[in-house]
Length: 88
Image (cartoon, rainbow, N blue to C red; front, side, top):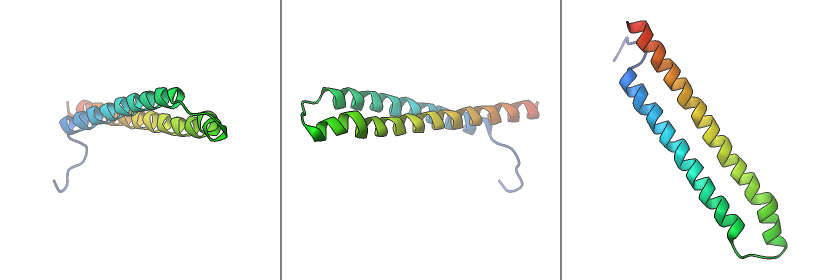
């Protein structure tokens, strides 16, 4: 749509919903992996390093991704609402 300014609120709502679903999926996967990482039968220095350092670092990274996507979702919702308000 050449010359259009703003956004299509229905498209923005769909985008926000997809972002919310992605956040939920990442959180669920992280939780599943965390449970498995702590429950796996694995002993020794490599296991200790993985359980105390490697996995927590990756878990934290996944949590940051989920938080950042949630912030994007909030931005999309805010922009959607501004478009609706401006169009009334």
